[in-house]
Image (cartoon, rainbow, N blue to C red; front, side):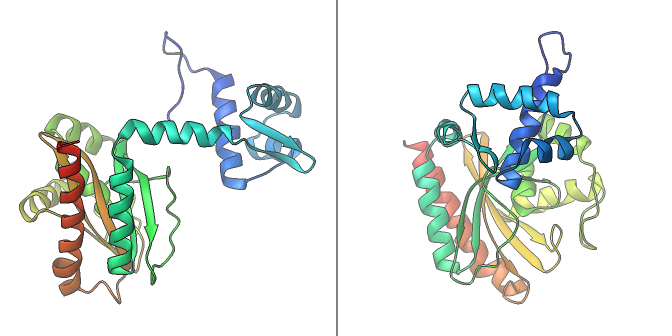
Length: 256
């Protein structure tokens, strides 16, 4: 998560701690004061003050066995979702994509130089992954991320690529900017991007961009095990599915 700063650019420690607590409770669901203090490496008195403030703001709910996120977070999430626009159309297409292929489908957007999952649906044969709506993945090793990057304006594209750490997640992961730029050209020419076990070993993905005039809004993808995502199926049937879903979202965005 990006570090919050005040108007002079100084990092505000209290805000950092508050968001660290929220992030922790999102992962752990519910924790006690002692557990939160131990996990975050702060004193109980410091954490207690932040917990009290977050409870006063109705962001957290105190219960006998610990603190949890409040339902107010749902309202915040809905507001964020509505800001992106056309959520109903995106959700419908992602659901249909998962149903048609039997696999896991996503819609992702770029935020802070990473791809953020905006929508997710599970097909009848889908292999569950760690992806959750709101979580992020690297752009250089995912079909969603590479597809979005390939269609960004060159200046923003270069800024994001320059900040990529190019961690080698698998033997197939792209680890150099030059390789990534070469793939961008291929993605633009054929109309879709591929993740060939580059982010998770044994998992392949195909994604198509969702564009609006000169802007890329995001990308839609389908993912599954290499045993079902053969080269022929990946570049034929599955690529057609994601391109069709992307086109429907584009049309609804253009004429909404």
